[in-house]
Each structure stands twice: as C-alpha cells, then as structure tokens.
Image (tube, rainbow, N blue to C red):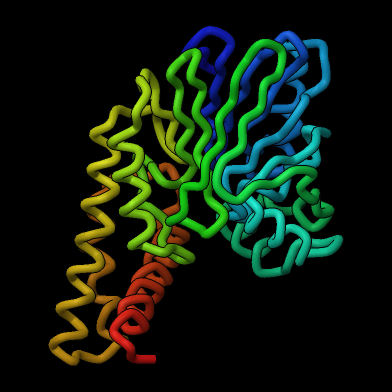
Length: 284
C-alpha cells in the first residue's frame, strides 16, 4: 500500500485493477474493490487497520466484472454511475456466468471462490456529477464515458489526486471490448484540460502516472480506429482484423496480466471497434 498524498492510499499490486482508500475522520472511502475474494478480504483487513471506523462508501469506477464482484467484502454502501447501478440491478442476486468464467480463466486458483459472490447493488448513483463531503474531505465524482457507459472519475481537490478508472491505464492495453471509443477520446481531452491542479494520477490498471499516459491511451485508441477504418475502406474481410493482434500486443511488451487472456481481450476489442466503426458508417 502506498500513501500518495496525505490520507490517500492506493494498492497497485492486486491482480487486474487498482484500488484506493481515502481516510477521513469518519472512516474510509474506498475506490473500487479487488478482483478476487481472497484479495478483497485482504484489502478489507488493511482498510480496517487504516481506520477503526467502518468503510463509509465504496465508489465503483465502472461495471467491469473485475471491479464489482467483490464490493460486498468492504461492507459499505456502493456509489456508482447510474448506468453501473442499472447493470448491477439487472444481475438480481448472482453475477452472470460469463463474468465468472472470464475472471476464472485469468486466474483459475483465485477464481474458484467467485461462484459464491452475491451481487452488491448501488445505494447511490448519479448521471453527470456528484459531490460527497465526509469527515472534512471533499470528493468529486464525474461521468467519464468511454471504457463503459458507466465509467466515472474521482477527483480530490484538496490533494489534487485524480482516480481515472479505466479511462487511463498503464503497463497493459486499454480494454475496448465495451468501449465507446469516440466518447473515450473526448473524456481524455476533458482530463487533459482539467481546470484544477492534478498532482497525482491513479490509473485504473498499472502504476501511477503523469499526463503523458493520457496521450499514450489516446494514441492507442486512435491507432486502432485508423487501422480498422482503412481495413473497412479497402473492403477486406472482417476476420482478417485478427492479423493486427501482434502489432497491438507489442505496444505493451511486459503486461501484468496473463498473455493468453490479454490476447482474447484484444481480439474482442478489435471486433468491437470494427463493428463500432461500421455502425457509425451506417453499415450493420
């Protein structure tokens, strides 16, 4: 665990996603939850060591399975974008098998416990902007569409810390499987032109970074869009887009996630962005 600013803690060593904690006089505000139950239980114990008071809220930065499935271990009301809240409501009591299988394939040993995870529904949600004052700390949450329609960012004006969720990732490729890539590029511009000081950027995955990381993510998305736009313009078969896998994987030579899992995610990303461009062109 690293304290990146006074009473602002992050953990980047859990598999898959970063998690954060804001210590206030009233207790902890958690940002996201680890991907697997044993790591989520470990995080809950570490949060208790930071503050004897209970966790006040768990803020979810999107509805990706590896962020939402273990929120219950933090035993706190969930705050999320309305689209994420809708997605959680749609799951009723259990998460869909597809989410369980994806996380289990990423880490079969840790994934054995996932079938026991009941759904934790959101207690509060918002569409554009939400502000929380807790224990003398101001927390700003804002819609950051792109990785998902329910993606948000979290900004702490007193310390200049920005949690970007999956809008910014380092050390591994951005996951575009459910992306609105045009909206994502606009969100990155919003972050680049943020009106207040940003002292620390905590990406959704990977090590803390500078504003340069925003450019890297933007370039990755634009490169994939341009490559597929040319592919479509040349009327080449859809199945040939998989030939670009190697080119995009080599942009991240030492990712922290399993290579085969990432290959599958990149394959799905290429297919999704191809279909996204076709739909924008009026071709279904």
